[in-house]
Length: 110
Image 1 (cartoon, rainbow, N blue to C red):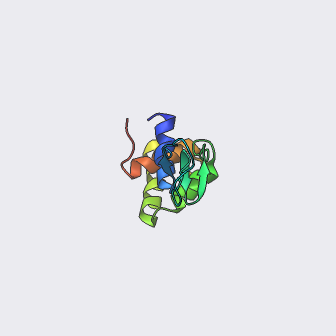
Image 2 (image 1 turned 180 degrees about the vertical axis):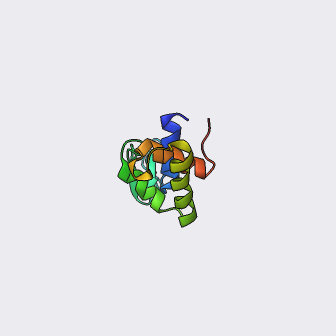
Image 3 (image 1 turned 90 degrees about the vertical axis):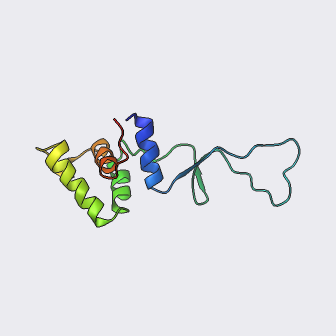
């Protein structure tokens, strides 16, 4: 998977949603009309860039902690037993954790 696709999938798991933005018309907006900014939305927060999931281990750990215990256990097993057999999970990089999370959830594409 490309870095952009990995970040997109992880951000969706983290609760972010992509909005293309509202079409701006000539003249003032109609009363009560919501103007949605282009970007990633999490509630009322809007960001043009997302957390650095591929390099920030803490950001990925927070997403993993949102998953159920079975997924967390499967990630640990996948990293330790198959992906990186000589490396304990605690030493895994952010990118390795992202890959393991997406593989466990069947969202990884070769």
